[in-house]
Length: 136
Image 1 (tube, rainbow, N blue to C red):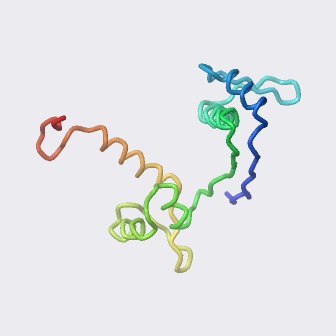
Image 2: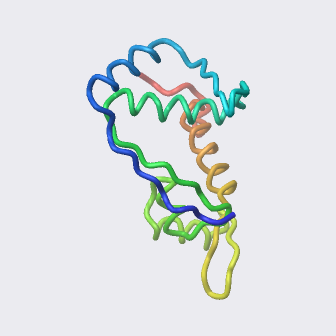
Image 3: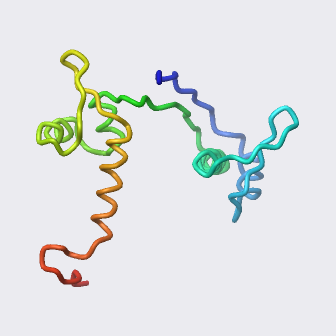
């Protein structure tokens, strides 16, 4: 999948943002009409649309872009919220699978998402070293 250039939309005028914010308050049910036909969005698409509308309703500017299936190490590190060097070290240790395009490393988006899911799961688990619940 190719990366499509991002599109940035400026913040809505204050009155429009306020009206959109009030409309969305307490609701995540979004109906989409395309050429007069109603479409029910799958949950991930609905969540993305609601997030976009909430940001606009909060008076924020937004940028929409797509993500490649195969990521550079820089892009993968950015998505994971870690440094490029740390990510490269993890690929060297085999913690995150990597593919090479010539001499350039590429990482699948699914591999980064799986690693992020693992990190979230570890944060939720009790202290596994002692076998006891962490003290609070």
